[in-house]
Image (cartoon, rainbow, N blue to C red):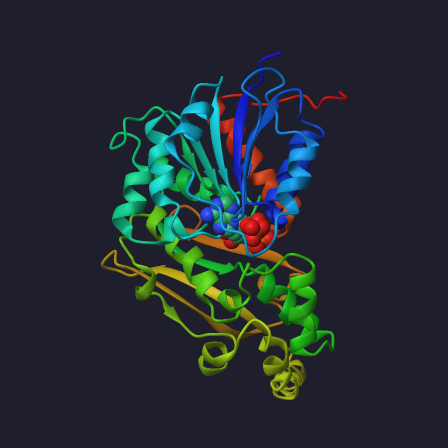
Length: 367
Ligand SMILES: NC(=O)c1ccc[n+]([C@@H]2O[C@H](COP(=O)([O-])OP(=O)(O)OC[C@H]3O[C@@H](n4cnc5c(N)ncnc54)[C@H](OP(=O)(O)O)[C@@H]3O)[C@@H](O)[C@H]2O)c1
């Protein structure tokens, strides 16, 4: 039976594996994993039926030695995906140099669906080339709901404000799954360094947790959202205050990070206890504001908020985005829920695939 889409997956980490598991399990009658790559290797399905990458190929790919480096995805691989029924490239990496690969895929009519913020929060001109369907021939979709808040409907909500002529005034975001989890865990008495280690074990952190702790990951999300409402903001324009001192992050290696953070445990515990006495809580927020002249500003940093604030009530790694607009002026429109983790991010990628290929709903194999 022809599949609804033939997918080349980049990345076999937390998100990539969750995505592959869902497709090969409940959705295998409709979606096909036609190729999988990580930074070490590439596995392609056969040229003839069955086209899927099989379990043995996947095990081999996962087991490749850490020091191996894959060559670039060349045009012949993309041509093979483009020749299939509906070709889709799914990016579940944090590689910043994938923009050129996206452009080659889109030019061949391959839909590009990404969880990777970097190509969208990189140089504005590159982002425009990707999102502007007319500029690139318009045959294939480029979708990126998973980049901000995993499966929470954040990008689509913003697009709808723009499409329907609403005017965004401000966007307040508690969007770091990692820092949300860490602040909640510290409020419950877990030391900073332990809370970060748990967040890493559970797959909430960025591939490099320093991206979370330095605020750069949330600044990228702020750039993606600000650009959605018309800003030409670059990442360097976001006023970022890191969660832990910049010096510590600059000098830490991934091996020394845990021990370096442990030196801050007592100071953070003290800060959290003092805030608790004042009925306040530490959170890490990003804010996008449109000033009276229409100029869009973005900032991110740790703030103390009253316990009555909606963001203070978030549990675990939950995320919250509050949109204040012309039409939602008195009470912000709030999107809230699980904003990180493999399965929810994979869900967002899948929903984008179905939107791209125009299949509204796909019954599971065992339905
Ligand atoms: N985790 C979440 O909750 C979440 C939520 C929303 C969005 N995201 C985004 O999703 C992306 C993946 O996150 P993750 O947590 O799954 O990261 P991860 O566990 O570190 O996995 C990253 C994967 O990407 C692979 N990779 C790196 N460069 C590559 C390249 N050029 N081509 C092919 N594969 C490459 C790595 O290969 P090796 O295995 O060879 O190292 C690894 O398999 C990131 O951009 C992240 O920001 C994550």
